[in-house]
Structures are given as structure tokens and as C-alpha cells.
Length: 231
Image (cartoon, rainbow, N blue to C red; front, side, top):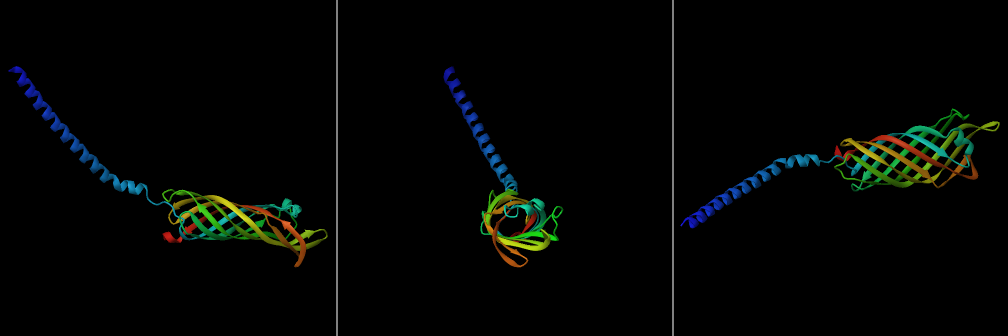
């Protein structure tokens, strides 16, 4: 009769062990569920919105500009760079697509050029394509548009006389850069833009010239953008 007693005792031990395992399983499951629920707010905070490109935005920036021209070879060698400022307005249809318009003006250095003043301005409109998610504070972008540029020289030396020179025309605008959101609704933006591919009409002392000039510009800008939708 010893064998049946041993088998019955073993069955009871297995039964007790099974009950203990089930209790431990349910306890562990409840503990894990409670931990996940308790930590859910912290995950929400980690994935909070850090940036936006939707809605109306206003910007201001400083710039450095360089230019070149085969027609104005003497001028671009003597006054090939300058600095200035600009203003910008944008409207984001989505977090990816944004329309923008901006005005920039740069004053060329006259250290090596005999002239009273030389400035290049541009009025640009186009589309900007933004990348990355709104949970990221750093957002790269590219942009494409059309620019209407004007260059104006006052009393620039021309042989034995001083003339006023004006050139203006359209150009393709291609650019890109980075926006870093310090804290909504404010972002710091770094932009590089190339404008070229068109011919500019020329005026000398108010009279139209039959010649047309090739003008290429490259502008680097650093500025601030305020997103009014986040105010």
C-alpha cells in the first residue's frame, strides 16, 4: 500500500505547485499591467509636439550674398559680396507643404569699387517641402520658386564719367536649409538659396540698353520664424 500513498502525495504536491504558479502568474500580469498604465503619461510627454509648419508664419533674417556675371565681370570682381536683411511670410497647408513669399536686400561692399552705393534685392515666391515629424525639434527642408531681382548702382565709375546702372529680371530659385524649434512657436532657421538661369534687362542713366545680363546669386540667411498658429 506504500506505492499508492506515494502517488497520491505526489499528486497533491503537483496540485499545490500548480496553484502557486497560477497565483504568481496572475500577480505578475496585474503588476505589469499596472506598471504600463502608470507609465503611460510619461510616454505621452516624451512624444509631445516639438515643431510645426502649418498655418501662418512670419520671419525676419540677416543674409550674406555673393554674385557673379559674365556680362558684369568687372563689377562682380570688385564688389562680389555683401550683407543685408530680409522678411518672410509663409503658410503651411500641411506639415509637409508650405507656400512662402520673401523680400531680401543686400548691400555690396565698395572697398574696391568706386561707387556711391550698390545693392541687390529680390522678391521671391515659391513652395517649401518640410521633412521629419512634429515630435522632432530639427526640421530640414528644400524649396523651389521664382525670384524677381533688381540690382542698382549709384554713381559707379565708367571710364571718365560716373553713371547710374540698373539691372532687373527673373530667375529660378532653389534653396534648402534647417529649422530648429527653440520652443513653440519660435524657430531658428538657416537657409541657403541659389538664384539664376535668367537674363536681366539693363538701364544706364535711365535709358534702356539693348543688352541683357546674366546674373547668378547665392544667399545664406540666418533668422527667426514665428508660427502664429501656435500662439
